[in-house]
Image 1 (cartoon, rainbow, N blue to C red):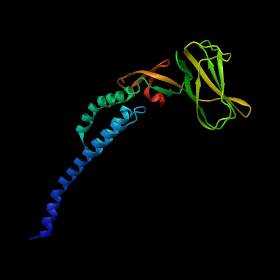
Image 2 (tube, rainbow, N blue to C red):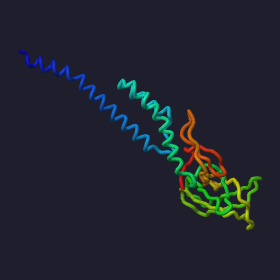
Image 3 (cartoon, rainbow, N blue to C red):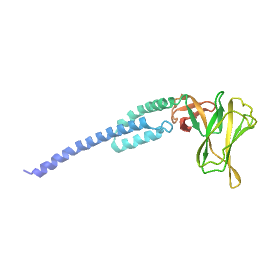
Image 4 (cartoon, helix red, strand yellow):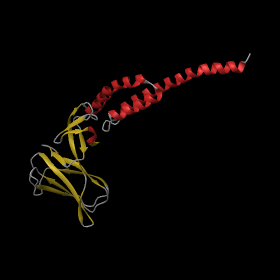
Length: 222
């Protein structure tokens, strides 16, 4: 009796089953990985549907799981809902977006951040009304590189109270004798959230004074 031959034959018969078990574990691990990825993704920088489905497609091609892509198409709507729920938590909060438009509330201040790529001897933050007239200039003095918060109390340079509403904010500094513009982030309140439509990347937020913007346009939550 050829024992070694019989053992080899048994081993060969077992191999497909072991490979199948390996595939099953791969499927389970992949499902867990993708679900975890959905739950923990950054709501302000959500994965695009195309990118998400590309990951699924590459895995189904490698493992031959034709059913996986069908089942994960159902996860797309769940993913959008999850993003919307995360975005909904921003309603009523102030966020920072890269724009020169700011709103002076009836009570409170117009606030934002000037981004300083390098230390400056002084930066001027100018506030302009809807007519384009400069109503206030804030001088910061010497500042190190980094984010420089600012707040405008609504008073003009001559001490008059400016009406609540929309204003344009700009910031400049002197570099080698030339005036250079500085990037601005203005604060705005999140009024509502709109669900993503077909082909859109993530929800959109309605910001007070700025209108509708992509969730990914938000740079910081205050």
